[in-house]
Amino acid sequence: MAPNSRPTLVTGTAGFIGSHVTLKLLGQGHQVIGIDNLNNYYDPQLKADRLKQFENHPGYTHYTCDLADRTAVESIFSDHLPGRVVHLAAQAGVRYAAENPHVYVSSNVTGTLHILEGCRHHGTEHLVFASTSSVYGANTHMPLAEEQSTEHPLTLYAATKKANEMMAHSYAHLYGIPASGLRFFTVYGPWGRPDMALFLFTRAILADDPIQVFNHGHHKRSFTYIDDIVEGVVRVLGKPPETDPNWQGEHPNPQTSGVAPYRIYNIGNEQSVELMRYIEVLEENLGKSATMEMLPLQPGDIPETQCDVADLARATGYTPKVSVEEGVAAFVDWYRSYYH
Image (cartoon, rainbow, N blue to C red; front, side, top):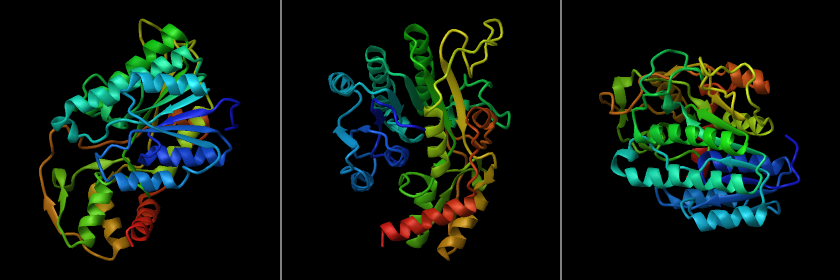
């Protein structure tokens, strides 16, 4: 994607996906304005070290602030007038939402409102925002495709992401802001989040501690390597959506819109992998076997995800392709290097 004359605003630049996207954009010659609140949901040192990869880059400008701070967000928009916005910042973690619901609404709903307001008042040409496969909730029709129902989220986290999709559509309709929502499927890889399964499993196995395997290992997931996610994000960023001329109000397609420049895409690996295979690949790369504590399905957990990525492929020419064998090996290499 060619650089824009106006800078690109990226939220969550100290986060897992945000840091990788920022590096990609800087490598392509973009000017990037970064926002992150550097909270302590997990190890702040990991976030600081992600930032160190690019914080002194001449094309990068950083702001440490919370998206719930309306005045701060408005000031950043008015000072820099970003042409494109990649909104990745959010309070993550499906299970954490049950303990801290107010944090999710403040970050994921109020924070997104402030980003939408910034786009509205400063002529943003394209908003790309992170959603999640969790919005499919109780839907068990596989593979999961964008035109299917997302009306039954099983967690507050998923509900806030569904709200983001609806908020973006309303702003796209009312103010003509081209908006693309990206439903990510189980992202993993170097610089990943310590609360995610691969990170937790690796740490526990190396320490000879048992790993907690939910649903007795019967989970299946479209595990998606970080580089595949980043490529999808950047390609979509270069393709602002338009209204869909084939859209019908009598039979509304939730993926597109006939009244707004709006589009939803899945980004995930088409190959759904059993959790036990994922663990097996990790054991092979660590050279150690895991001691497993088998546990039942947790409240809000989805037993299976399988990603239909056909629409992303048609729109961008790209399909996520990194296998778990390649991706887990790359993560283990990074983990050993980072933690010595």
